Image (cartoon, rainbow, N blue to C red; front, top):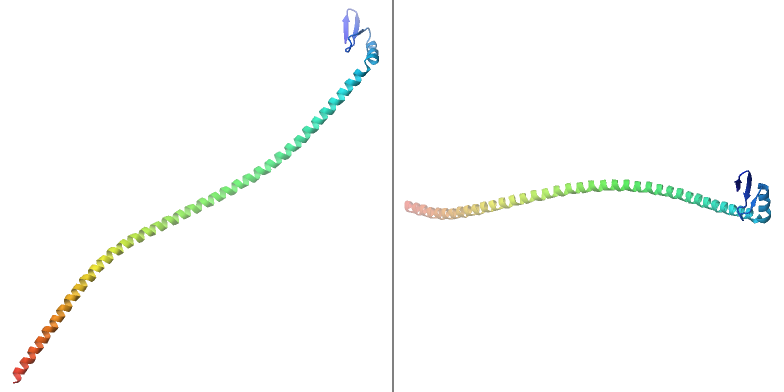
Length: 170
């Protein structure tokens, strides 16, 4: 590094701190006394370059892997969206099926209730008819009794008529 001491410039060696009047003197000193310093700096620079290159390659590989992962995730997302659509369709079908079954169930309950009502009506009608049958049987029995009495009476009357006829014929 040049130092300004009034009119004269001095050049200091960055490695050992020795000063020189000219830049070329400093360069000669560095070339003779510290020759490995430049090589070390270049090697360090090459090592750094190689490290940075490896990092860049790793980053590039990682970037490609991330792109592929993003592509795969996008594909999975599309498949999941399709699955969701399919499930929504299935859900709608199931809801419609449930609604239809509920309607069928309501119809069946209504029919059962109607049959219960009909059954109750039929029971009442049956009781009424049984009473009518009983009444008719009683009337029939009464008529049969009347018939029997009438027949007996007729037999008596025939017998009396025959007796009258016999008395008249005599």
